[in-house]
Length: 134
Length: 134
Length: 134
Image 1 (tube, chains in turn yellow, purple, cyan):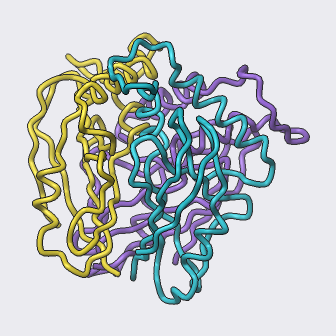
Image 2: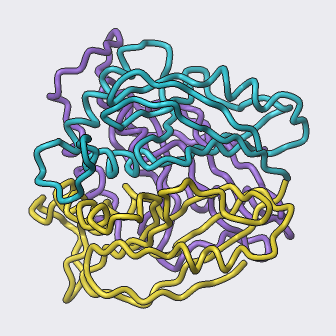
């Protein structure tokens, strides 16, 4: 299992981590797939288009509209308002699983792997990369 | 493949099943990840914070708001109103995949594995646990 | 890795591809799970009920309501309005992972595997099928 460390910069941020994952799966010939996993409850992972950065900006806006701040949350964290961050994180999920072909990520032409920051105070995040066999 | 049986108690319920999954992956040294899977269409799985129970209560409220009863559904089940339960189930998904480290679930400090009950009449649910290798 | 080709017919369409996936996992005795993956950013996969076709029609309606066209998107594709298609695709995800039992998909009685078409102009889509071992 490889561990990546990614520093996020703002609340509700989509951050392209494809290069880091690509590097982490190097020399894995013969493996079938890679599990990318985030061990956090206010961060997550998603696969989407990473050619036009506007797609990520749109998506950040959409997720904040889907699960708005104003829904009357009961969970309280001192000094932070992370209640909506939890369902947002689960809607996106803490993991992606990508097939490997000849030791390379078999992503589509337009697909990239994004880390989600959902927390109000951005953070240094851990991402684990686990190789799965045939 | 291991099978767990979990009894749910109410409509739109998040139930922490981390201890049962932890038990099911015992003695799996050398394995890479575990696939937890629900073979139902009105139940599902999610990973989220399980320290403060209010996070789960908030999430149940949020999912019912995201996909409300009042959307004019066409699917009819005699004696039950499960039409919104189906998209709710797919938004959350029927599976989670968690990496293993030295035969233990490599969950984050705050992460737990939850079973979702989406059906109007709660149920005895099946959850399968499948080990994936390197 | 097996590749399927599926032709979609309309925007926001759920298409049952269970028979094609079942065929692709034939003769995989001893394998643990199958990863079904879509290398597209405006298509996806989901598992849901496929007995009553109304469940799929309801779900198509629900996804268009969840992420509506009218949200003021910034991403522009010439001749197409696919901005909402991207978050819709990520909400559903580009992959499903199904356990195998004796070389057969261990789906529940009512579960089927669906391909999502989110793009305004339907398309010929690629779906990859990757076997994961124990």
